[in-house]
Every structure is written in C-alpha cells, then in structure tokens.
Length: 286
Image (cartoon, rainbow, N blue to C red; front, side):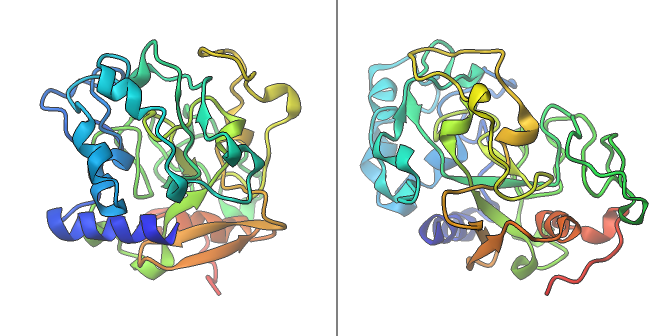
C-alpha cells in the first residue's frame, strides 16, 4: 500500500492531479461502459515497475476488445495483493462484474482501493446512525456527514469518485496528513472490484471497518458476472484479514493501521477532504 501511495504521488508530481477513477486516457469519454481499460490503477503502472504491462494496453478499448487487454487481465501483480488475505493466492478472479469490462469477467482483484470518503454507493445510506449528536440521517446529501453525496457520479468528499474527475492534493483543505487516500479491502467479497474494473473499485468510509459480507452474499466462484447479490452496506468498506482492523494510506503517503473500533465520526472526517463543508460535529482526530 505504501508503494501504491508513493506511485500516486509520483503521478501527481508529473501531472498536477491524481489519476481520475475512470476515462483518464480515453479521448472520447462517455460515462459508464464507454471507455477503455484506463482505470486509475493502470495510470500508475509505470510508477510501480509495470511499464511493460502499461505499454501493452490499448487504453482506447475495453478490456475484452483486444488480445493484449485480455492478456493483461490475467497478469498477476504481487505488489497489489495483500498477503494476509487467503484469496490472494488466486488473485485473478473469473467473476468480476462490471460494465467497463463488458462481456469480460476475468480480472485481477483490487486490495488497495481509492477512498470515496463517506460517500454512499448507489446513493444508499444503510449504515448511517440516527444519533442526533452526529447530525446524520438516512438521506444522502452534501451536508450529511455519514452519507455525503448528491446522486451524481462526479461528486465525492474523498479523493475518488464514480466519474472522470481528477482531484488534486491542493483540493484537500483538511491537510494530506488528515485524509485517507487508499483503503484496504477484500475483492473476494464483491464482483464489482478489480484493477481494471470501473466502479466501485473504491472504498466508502461510511461503513465501519471490518464489516464483512455475509456468506450468502459472496459472489459464486464461477466464470461470468453474477448479478443480484450486491449488498453495498457490507461489501464496499475498509476491511482485511488482519486482526482487529485494516490498513489505510493517508494522502501524505504515510500508512496506518485503522482499528475496527474507530469512532465513526472520526472515520467520516478522515474520509473527507473538506470537513468544514460538511455538517458534522468536529471530532478529535487523535
């Protein structure tokens, strides 16, 4: 995770912004499913000693459309796998489900995902408490500290969104040492996860650390995209098989172990770049 965070810094130094979640290299972006293989992961391959893999990609086409892109989907990238996860022994999954991959369901899992911040997935706020002191509600809005969203792909309180907007470290008013950049997660728990997947290859910090999918919710280990088993309030949070917590990288490049007992207002605050713009009781980040 440290190396991925430093690669993000190298990319930012060269371009003045972080890579966008999607469509970063596509000359004709058009939303979900229209772009090529240009996930943010692919954009930093050269900084992760994966220049050859990057050069092999046709970034103008989807993953299934060219032989080189299909071959790239099966390349094992040890530096992107958390060794604490037993599923890391077989990091190429055959059950990835994503419009960006179209009919191709094979792909490398994503253990170190970009941070949405406290942004809802599918605009649902399943995990929001009714604690009045936290000023939260089950309704997504730009002022909701727990479920901070407005229903669009491009808005995000974190460093990544569902859209093509690229964010700069200059956009982080809270300071890079106070804001999540990357969060550990478990790709086995959802088919909507992958190095070449569109969305959500990101973690939302509205979900408590180490909230795991139920056994019945795990996608089956079969080739193809199996729909109908997505439960976002458990699948898309920060999680790991490390005891009692998971790892995160802050935007300053440092990595930290985040306890599963962390206060949720602190979790939301660490997820957002601009805490002052969100209607939340200001928590201590100590």
